[in-house]
Image 1 (cartoon, helix red, strand yellow):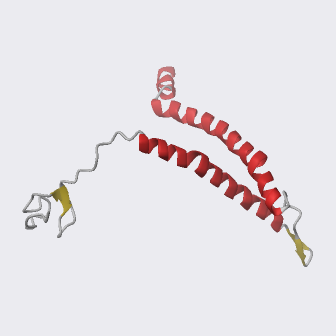
Image 2 (spheres, rainbow, N blue to C red; image 1 turned 180 degrees about the vertical axis):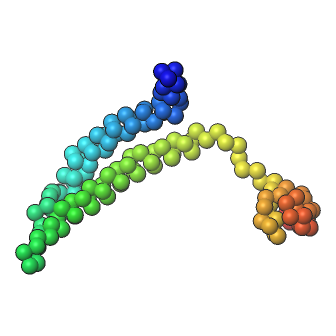
Image 3 (tube, helix red, strand yellow; image 1 turned 90 degrees about the horizontal axis):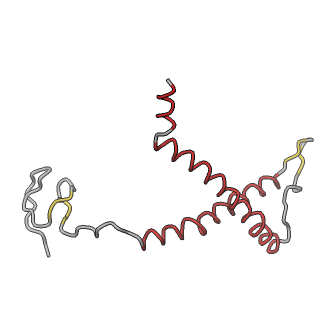
Length: 137
């Protein structure tokens, strides 16, 4: 039983998941610090109010704290913007530069009948056997 447990722990996906959780936790701290220490004061400088949690209204002795909702919404938007502009955009740019895939094969065309990809020089579709004629150059 210990042998099976050891095999389970040393599987690649379990270790990868553990690393992802640890890195994700550390990254969360970085993003939270960016939002709390840089973006929130910037929003406060623009709108003049760093905390909206005191905004409320009352109807029939029920208090609606819409300011807390505004705070949560601003936090969500700033966190997603920070992740997008400081992580997703740079990683996408890096991946475009490091692309190792071969260029898309331009020697294929869609079959007019079944829309499968067929060689450009084909006269008959290999999938639906429809006659497709010669490719227009």
